[in-house]
Image (cartoon, one colour):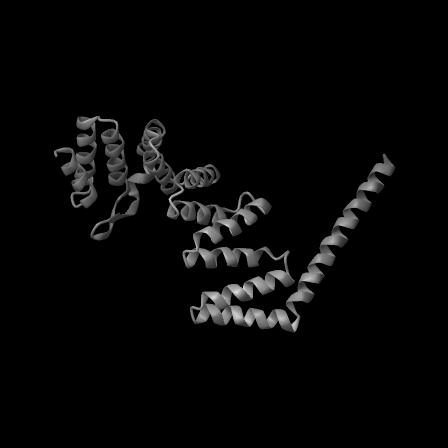
Length: 233
């Protein structure tokens, strides 16, 4: 038993020394003139909106300090902010290999996949996010993507979950319309989504009732009005 304890202590000591050495190495790199120069270039690239300079500086710092995950974070955000979605996804994949619970990487990946038209991959990421934090906006996004992918039963199940959630009654959300964006009651958005699911399932009367319910909550809801008008054509 004493031998086992001694062996464990030696392993712990070795691990602590390794971490200490890595931390010191990282600190030494950050103090080097070349690293400081690239960091200045990165900050200037951000300041003047020059994404190419900022990215180049980040890559240089990553080469010098490959263990620094904050640099990968910054690179992912930089690609995301400038709508370089494929590159953003690739960086986020590396971040998620290291930390599967990295929510910003999951969110950037989800939105990037959707922007590239890869809705099935976007759905996977949004579902992962929802499992990690039960957020009504994420669940709404999951239901909307399921609708787009023709997974009507799953989409309706999530709509029912949302309608039973008291939080939606006090919440707002922003919807994109042909005229721009419109802030509406979250409950109205969910009823509109419900109507779309029913419409796609050829349940015209049920869809009409859902769109009217959305309009009773939010009379100026342009998208619900448009969807209701489509049913009467």
